[in-house]
Image 1 (cartoon, helix red, strand yellow):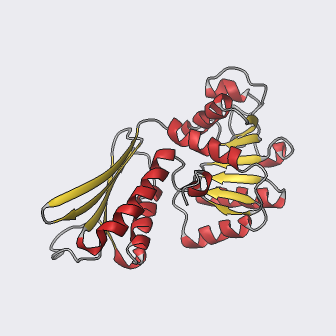
Image 2 (tube, rainbow, N blue to C red):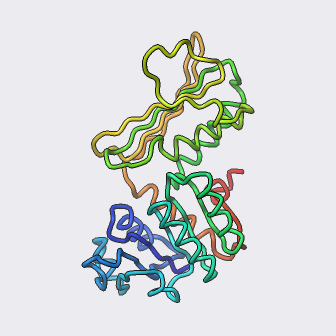
Image 3 (cartoon, rainbow, N blue to C red):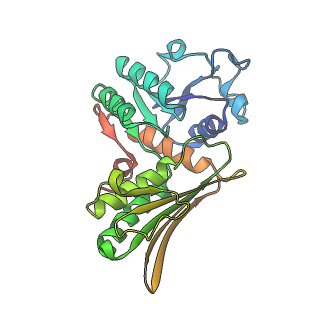
Length: 266
């Protein structure tokens, strides 16, 4: 599989190039930058700090349309949808790690998946996706007797809140409990809020320093508390998972997939 990385000069982009370079079964086919970037034309491997790879960074997907089979995209919702439409039109697969998509934007991504294979997950980490499986199991066993609270922390530059991962954790727990997260979610608390209701799922957000990503889900009742925690210390965790998803897409038909499919956790 020839992989294209968009946003190649960013923190995530550099990790993705490194992960592709270190992985078996995939090769870097293209690296895309902003059109105005001074690094257009530079070797992608040198941009990422892994040495020359013989792949010159380009300014758009049009410039490398014949050089890749799957695109890895951790950009912004609007750009991701544009890229997904491009991949669908040109029969390319895409791995989407972009967070902050609205329901409408997710519906647009699903339309693209009707024409080409898409892996979309708010978190590409293998550990996080195993955690989602554990959360579903815990919620099914513990039921409504336990209060559920989700605490997440990320670096100061993260623009969406709560994180896509925290929201997915809430969705998984809500589904296991037979609830609709849109109806039971409570985002932060302030002032005289009254006693906690039995079926609400609370979210607390921390933004500070250079925290890569931490998520803690509490199941608490009188007398005990269970915490299921995942902590990421490097973006390489997400990059490796995304590359694993890209490799998994080889030969897959058009459709919407997630990391639970990639890891055979369903």
